[in-house]
Image 1 (tube, helix red, strand yellow):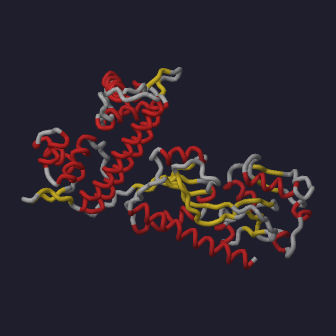
Image 2 (cartoon, helix red, strand yellow; image 1 turned 120 degrees about the horizontal axis):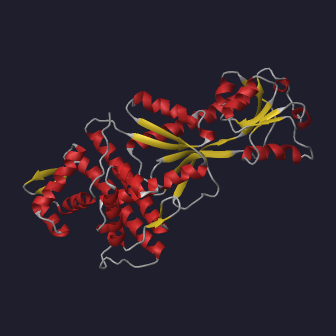
Length: 417
């Protein structure tokens, strides 16, 4: 079982990077203005946290181990993200740094950032203090220290409690991205000593849940039983927010055109087509040629008004000068839609991907009616400049494999209809 992750001390991280850069304690002590015993103690604490040596000590200096090299990459990325967050926060407030001209990313502490994130999460100093296990006066003092160090106004009172300013929200976002890098460092270093502590958090949208995602999860966990996978379902805006704040590693689902914001990028896996489906043995499933008038003879179950699929459904008839069917059951639940379909003569306009398993089992049949212009790309959305762990790379490879198998299977299924 993976141990509880510790919040790494930012000063210890800075010390580690200076030792790695200078190849020894003496050079690092001069660079960070600390005593050599303090440098030695900082490195020992980091190695204790990781349960791995980060350096090989020799007469000619200190050299990174495999674990140390992995940590160096993640540590550099983490501090770079904090630095970027501090710079952007200053720009948001449109005022200079008041801390004697020294960039405040070198002055802030892990305790201060932890307090900021706790207040963001709780919206209240008292609840935030309880959340991280400190007294309310202590958390309030640390929060004010962060404001003093940064020269920024970070907290404002609201009717609900405490809100973050725009500058504070930017700093919180980049802090969470930095801590995500450090979380990945634990996983990668654990792997060097044979411990599988990987934890993948994937945001998922409806069109990826039926086959591609469960197939990839089953294959990964069959070979890596200790990998933890958290699946976050929700509206696109919610999972995109989680992705951009380091709370979600990547999103699998329908892609957007254009890309919604310039700090994410998309990779298409397959194109999902809409299809008209009916129960096996339905009269229309046996006909070689189907017309719109045939489709009007039967009741339908369709997605709710306003959804892209419902718009395609309405346009299918209106573009031909016909009124859409009236005997509708509209629902946002694809599980309910499938159940209604299999137990009645209703028709359904639904993603071919989402009906893949039912069609393969012979529970439903695709009505032979062409629906041009209904394709939608399904794929992976990641943060720009994201560095995947080996486990994340393996999982995304399995998603690509499942998508390829789905595409081949769907092509064969359609060809045989």
